[in-house]
Image 1 (cartoon, helix red, strand yellow):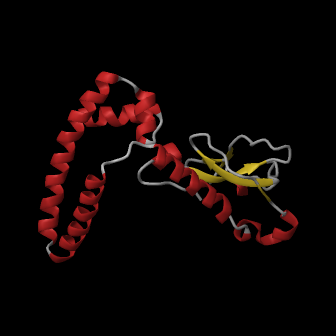
Image 2 (cartoon, one colour):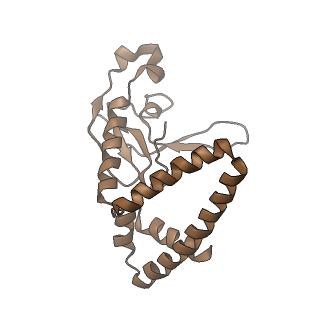
Length: 189
């Protein structure tokens, strides 16, 4: 199972990744799902069960697309037995990843408290309006889209002039490439 936040997307996508007996992380495996469908690459612990020529994971840990790795948790394959794919509790590495995401959030640029409060109140009011008067809610959302598009464009022009993609990426909790893509997305909107 892949873990993802809406705010950080694929930049901080997480999994319960495999760890081999020597402490190394195996290369991703390709899973052929048959027919004309495309296959799937994964580094998740369950793909390393020792079958079909794949190595057997000795442990698993939270792994993030940004390169962060959490604490390793041992796998007792004998205890898992026939039910191995369904019975392993991956809540510990997931919790480690959630803590990593909290750290990333704390490293991002803080929003002014007044703006955070305003955004929260606006969301509450829009959700209420969506239930009471859906057409009015849609009209309000369209107005917000216009505001965010024009404001995003202004902020993007300023950010592009600086071209400090590493700094901007950290401020947004994204990779430098994703930060640049976000800026360019606003410039094109």
